[in-house]
Image (cartoon, rainbow, N blue to C red):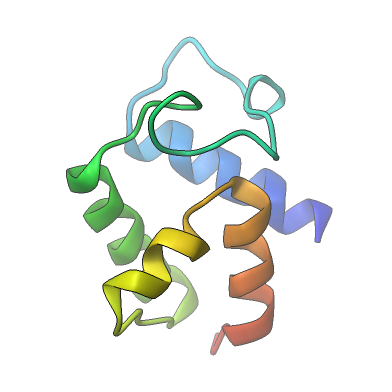
Length: 85
């Protein structure tokens, strides 16, 4: 799980061009949206594309996305439970 968390943190850094950050800078338990990393609804779409392309996971219900994209840990747990690749 820790490897997946680190991988996700790096994906986030790369996707959103957080050039001054390292994986260690991202708190695994901090919110991805709002006060935490400050991602927005457009960023959520980018995360959904990463899930689909890299892990073979498609989120059908947007209400589920809010829970899944809560923190890096909730995202990693969802991927670990649902990954197809």
